[in-house]
Length: 77
Image 1: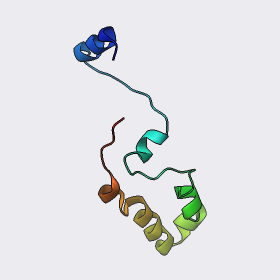
Image 2 (image 1 turned 120 degrees about the vertical axis):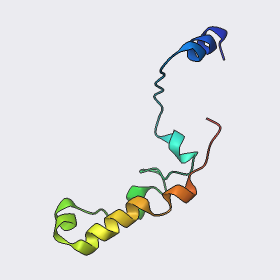
Image 3 (image 1 turned 180 degrees about the horizontal axis):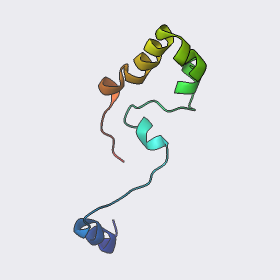
Image 4 (image 1 turned 135 degrees about the vertical axis):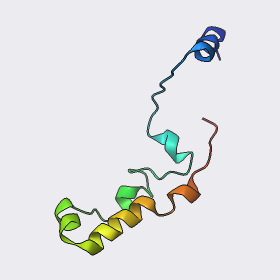
């Protein structure tokens, strides 16, 4: 890393880093558009269905929380 940049980071009180979507997949977090992405492996749940059905709401929340914690890991990025 550039010495000047390294010094700037070390002395900063706050840092914001913008990255692309692919950084999370390295950590085991599913992406949306890839071959095994969320949009290709799950049927969409539409708002009117979510509001109108307790079972659909349960499925929606199950998708949000299933396996997320166990699949996360650090990456080299």
